[in-house]
Image (cartoon, rainbow, N blue to C red; front, side, top):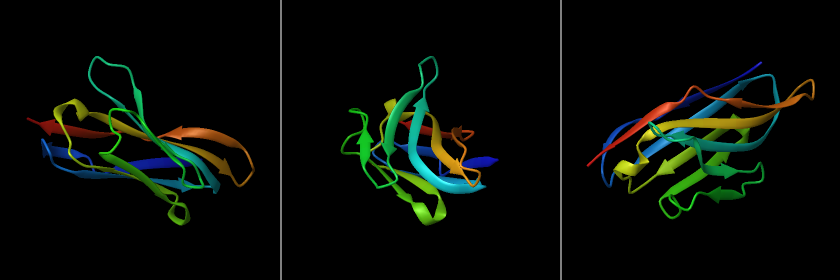
Length: 120
């Protein structure tokens, strides 16, 4: 079994920064694509940023130039550095990881979410 644990959320003022972390643990042979999603109240979950095992990143237009996704493959951890935050970034942020386990089975896992609240 694999678990994803997020941390780093909180309350910040407009223009502030936060860094989210998501650590995967368990019977991990290899971490494949990893990503951050967010869901605001009354809205659908949306992709924020994704990163391949090789480090290729992709961003939603709304966060380009402000957010940076990165990963540490040795630690099976993905990060999301969020700068110049605004109230529209307020949401529950989830990480997801496509994991190959030691038995070579492969599936996607989700974390429990971490709240990010940006005050105006």
